[in-house]
Image 1 (cartoon, rainbow over the protein chains, first blue to last red):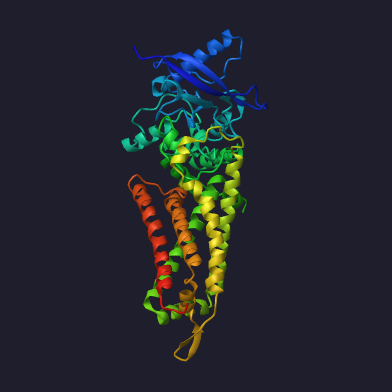
Image 2 (image 1 turned 90 degrees about the vertical axis):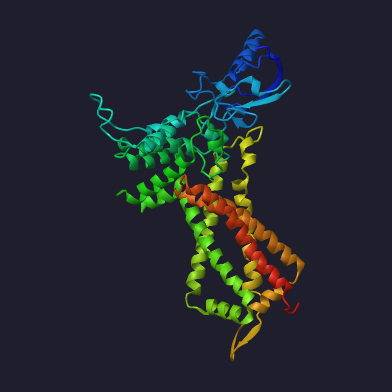
Length: 254
Length: 223
């Protein structure tokens, strides 16, 4: 770990509250270790800001191991930064070079209002899930593992969709701020499995209605969502949701 | 009928309408190109074909249908565009990096607007262009062959058509596979083929139309 410490210029979005106008503030940060994670680098800056009696930068984080989906920031124009299939917390400073200028902005979408600085309110996703991203089951004794046969390929496909951590990078990276990749992953993980069938039609209609109501944009098939997704969720899920939606609309009796 | 309204005003419904009207317009382009190729077979066949088309009792219903589909495609394009713009009112300070790599869909509205203008000029210049009589075994029909041959003698017109067809190609390149994706036709095996086919179709259709323009430009018809 003898790699040289880096000096960076950070341009960070500072916004004091949801209804305030924000702006980019510039900070010079010296002695950043290449082994730090991106969030540790911001921790370092925040420690300094607190010492200088300034307001530290608000940002979301929780697990810091790439699975909770909290760390939401757009780094140099890419949600979660330059490394593929990686959340911000798993991004390391060795991906940057000494002397770099890094612009850090919050995820931008009208459906994700800024709370403060880099922290945005993504509860629109929770409301989409509440609209249908579940299966209604009577709890009881756990069913036998092999009682419902599911082909391995189908199980894998459902699992890949279920890998979505709901971070919102798809919305942040889409030029239309569309939530189709997120919603389609949630629709798909259930639509693929037998347990999801009984509510399949109402689920897709209710979740899409909620998604539209929350003010996310439409899909124009740029596939940027797939490119920026830290879990590499495929746009095949969007096609599946489009299919499910058509099927549900045509076949439903109301 | 409430369900229908809900469906076509939903984000996915709008995409379906865009895709289906787009596919219909693509079908029209194919028949149009096939008709254009008759130009290579000389005035008699080309004029007979044009006469058969325009004198058919089905021409008005067909034209109304085509215009309706075209207008729906345009209305829904602007509708989705306005949804998309209002989904992110505060823009990023740094433009989205991945977006630069995938410009195809960003051009859809611009290329689409160009195509609208092109269609207006094209219909005005050819369909409602000069009427030259042609004698078909005693019957007088329109000499569309001559109209086309004369029309493409000015360099400005030729350049405008070539540019427009390239723009049409750019539009189709994204449109063709995207329409399939929008209606849910995606497959591990076939989607990569479909994307390749999109490029082939874009190049094929654009160069097909351009070929006819060049043929007309080089024809011996009166300048």
